[in-house]
Each structure stands twice: as C-alpha cells, then as structure tokens.
Amino acid sequence: MAWLVAAVFALVAAGCSDDQPGTAAPPEGAASVHELRFELVDRHPHDPKAFTQGLLFVDRDTMAESTGVYGESDVRLVDPTTGRVRERRALPKDRFGEGLAAVPGGELVQLTWKEHVAMRWTVDGLRPAGETSYRGQGWGLTFDPDAELLLATDGSARVSRRLLETFEVASVVTVRRAGRPVSELNELEWVDGVLWANVWESDELLRIDPESGDVTGVVDLSSLVPDLGDSDAVLNGIAHRPGDPPGRLWVTGKHWPEMFVIDVADT
Image (cartoon, rainbow, N blue to C red; front, side, top):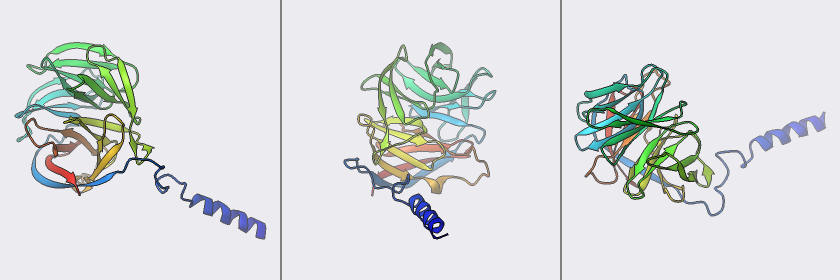
C-alpha cells in the first residue's frame, strides 16, 4: 500500500504545482500589468431590458447602443443622461446584434454574432446603409481614427484590424496579460491610441496596447455590478464621450438599470 499512498501524494502535489493556470509566474519578458483605480463620477439611468453589446458616443449628447438576443436585437440612439431611447431599429429575428462602431461619413457598423454580416446604419435616422460579410463570429467592434481601420473581436484572444469598406482583415494581434492570451475578449473602445476591452463574464476592464496586444492595466469594477439575480447581467459596454479626459469612461452591463461614469487612473 505504501507505493499507492506515495503515488496519490505525487498526483496531489502535481495538481497543486505552480505550473497550473493562474498560479505560475509570468513568462520572462512579459509586459507588466498595472492595477488601476477608479473614481465614480456620476450615474445615469439605463434601459434594464437592453442586452448591451456595443456602446459609444456619436456626439456629446447622443449615445449609440447595440443590443443582442435573437428576436430582440436592435440598434438605438440614446440620451446618455436620461437613458431615454430616441430612435430604435430592430434587426431581423434571425440576427443577433453584437459590437458597434461609428465610422466616417455619419454611419454606424454593427456586427452580428454568428450570421457573418456587418450591418451599416446612418446615424441620421438609423437608415440601413448596406451590409458586408465576414468570416467567423462577431463580438466587439471599435474604430481607430488614426489608421482608419476597424478593430474587432471574435470571442478569442485575437483583435483583428479590418478594412473599413470590405471588412477584410489587414492584421491580427493576440492580447496577452502578463504573457498569457486573454480569451473571450468582447466589447471594445478606442480612446486616444489606447484600446479598452471587456472580457466575457468578467468584472474587470482591460487597458491594452493595440500595437503589441499587451494588457497594460486592469481595473476591477465588481463594486459596480448590480445584484440582479440574472446570470446574463454581466459587465459589457464601454464608451468615451468626445471632449472628456482620456481616463473618463462610461460603463454599463447587460440588463443593468444604470450607467456609470468613472475616472480611471494608475494607482
């Protein structure tokens, strides 16, 4: 029996080794990750029926929002301070709305989850303005105004830069936190050369170097998560209002009754 006890002990010790995910030391040369702090600046009403997928400002007084769920997905324009939906356009019942980005020419681009279609809408009136097909799943979306490229996620650790007109992939970067890939990247927001991202079912907001893919900062927003008894009510939605400081963000989640304005800074 001694040999059996020794074997069991060895297996238990192996299972507790530092090589297990989440406990191992960062790979040599991995970029350092800063713990960020946030200050709550303000809070505003948010439609609790909205399964928020994409969020952004089209101007200082108007937000655009994409919502998901088959048969309930839409694109909408919202008053950021009251949460009132000013305009709304429903998606076909067989399309699940995902990430959203504002692009030059007064248009919005909205991803769909598994339908391989990027839908375009005019900001003025939310009129259909064309569709573009793509491969893979659609999750988060934002626009880099400097390079004039879209940045998209697909549920993996990859962020793809895509051409505005054709949605063709121009390049891909893998997002890594302390050297390890971060899967299930979701909603994105571009702010002054910095990429912010939600991770599916995480209460953390990631600050990412878009060139290297390195996570440079993490802020824990768990204190803002409402206790709704709804497993779908996760953090998702990042927006930056034009003219605000780069660290001031508007954040919300799926089915959240409030939207929060926060100032994020290094500790």
